[in-house]
Every structure is written in C-alpha cells, then in structure tokens.
Image 1 (cartoon, one colour):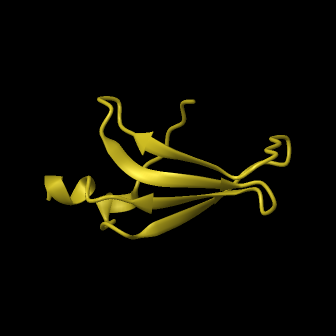
Image 2 (cartoon, rainbow, N blue to C red; image 1 turned 180 degrees about the horizontal axis):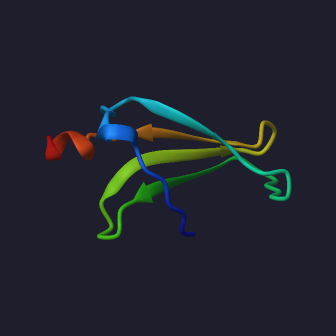
Length: 68
C-alpha cells in the first residue's frame, strides 16, 4: 500500500499522533495495524485503521528527530 503525505516543517516528535479520515468509498471490516515506512523501509510511524470511525491514527516514532 502506498500513499504520500508531508509533515509541515517536519515538526513531529516520537509519540505524537495524527488522525486521518478515510473516504467513505473505502471499506475496512476489522481493525488493522501496520508500519508506515519511508522509501528506504525505515519505520516513520505505527498506523492503526479503525473501520468504525473510518480513520487512520499514525503514532510517530523518533524517525524525524534523527534529522534535526
């Protein structure tokens, strides 16, 4: 699964979270968890899809802190 997004000014720290609302055209039947990775395979955040609220919550790792 591929997607793209940017973090304004790279201002995110480990433990910060972002909630993304999914379009109604997507259907999920169960809670799903996965790692959101960069192009090189480094884990940027842990993601959890909630089928009831049609949201994805990304909980960031210390990935961006390493580049400050």
